[in-house]
Length: 234
Length: 92
Image (cartoon, rainbow over all chains, first blue to last red; front, side):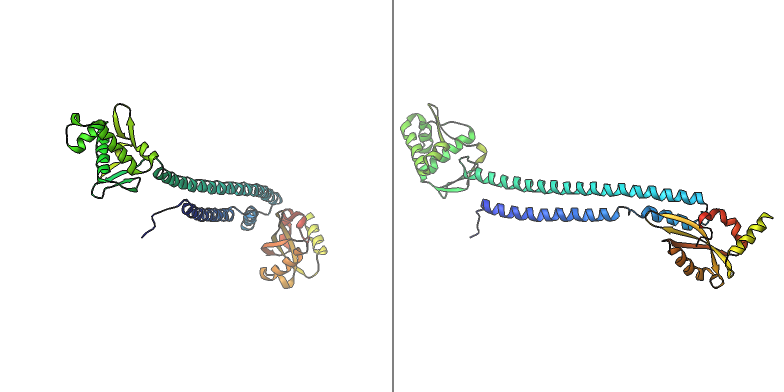
């Protein structure tokens, strides 16, 4: 039989695996980016090499003044390379920031997903009824996918209440008794209907849950305290 | 007349076996410094190929690095290059 129970620990385990893989991926990508960036930044000597090349390639450049000018050009290039070094630092700091932010957002994302899952589970197992499935053949009702065996009479009462709920009606004890027994409601006893309600609540067992599920509105009647959309009949 | 005296003076100053001269370009790194210079060569090094080693060695003593040799010329080419070479005129 397949295990259909997912526990919070399981979610946390797979979550931490996702976080580990994600962090490794982020750090790797940013490291590669950093390496590429630093490799492609112009070398501090690029300017000097260029000036030297100009000097060698032009045979006319022999005048002292011209040579001095070339040297000054090269020096300004060298001071620019100092600026480049500071750019490198800035870029590195930004990359570190980017890594930290990405890691943080990944952790938050995984946390949110895990919390959502847990919220879903809490909703399903809590008092809030998110699905009510009545199976008349098996005399079973599924509340939030939890199975309850009921007696014929109790199933009958629950079905009547569910049908009334879907129509948005309230039913008095007389009416319930009337629908189930097939007699006109005016001939029926209010007490008989109340007894059926009591039996339904008893067979559902948990007093509190059934009290919340089968609500009595004073002097008007009984109704299922659930949303219409969650009722399904088999 | 002046030119003749200068040439004579130069010839007197230079070693007897100097039969050719070369002009070259050299550099120093960190910070980049460049110079254009004229150098005298012995008979045995009057081609660019032979001069290369000689010049590299002689200017290398001061930390200069030879970039290229522009030309090999005779004594009559000295005058026109003197001004450009400045302090590196026949220095090494």
